[in-house]
Length: 238
Image 1 (cartoon, rainbow, N blue to C red):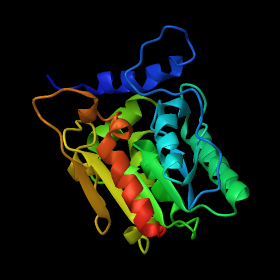
Image 2 (tube, rainbow, N blue to C red):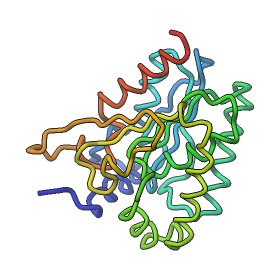
Image 3 (cartoon, helix red, strand yellow):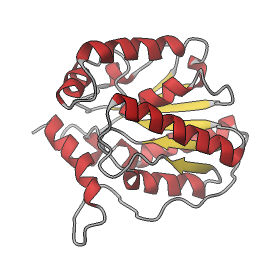
Image 4 (cartoon, rainbow, N blue to C red):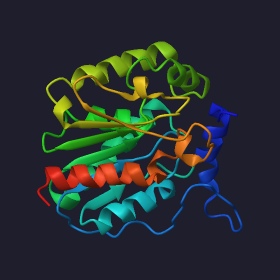
C-alpha cells in the first residue's frame, strides 16, 4: 500500500486543528515556538502548502538547540493561500528576519516552501544556505497538476513561475541543498533535485509505510534534521 496524495494532504491540513483538545495528529506538533535567540547564524523556515507553522516548531526547536536562530514563518491557520497572498506573506516574514537580526543567513523550505526559499536566493545576498525539502523543482508534473486542482494557480502559471525561480538560482546553486525522500510519491527524488546543487536522498525501507516515506513528514525525519545541522555547522564555522 502506497500513501496517496490525498492521505499526504490530510496529514498536512489536519494540523490546522492543533488547538482543538483531544485531536490526535501524526506530526510532532508543538504549540510553543522556538526560542527567539541571536544565534551563530539566523534563518527562516517556510511551511509547505496546507501546513500551519506549528507543524515546524519541533524542527525550529531542534535548530535552536544547536545554537542557530530561526523564525518559523507565519502563514495563518490552515495555510491555504492564493499566489498573491503567498508572495506577500513570504516577503513579510523574510523582512521580519532582516529587521530582527540585520541579515538572513539561511532558509529551510518544505515542499512549496522550498520553491519559495529558492525564490529568495537572488533577493537576499547574505544567504549562504538554502534547503529545499521534498520540493517540486524538476519535472514536477504531479505537483503542478494537484496545485491546479487545489487552487494554488493554473498549470500554465505554475510552469512559468517555476521556470523563473529556477533561472534565478543561476550563480547561486552552490548555496542550495535539496533533500528528497526516497519513497515520496508526490515529489520523487528525481523531481526534487536541482542541477548544480548538493542533492541528498534520504533512504527508507520500502516494506515500511511510516511517516518517513510520506511527502509531508520529511521535517520529522531525524536524518533530515541531521543533514541540516551538519550543513549549518560546516558553513558557519561551528
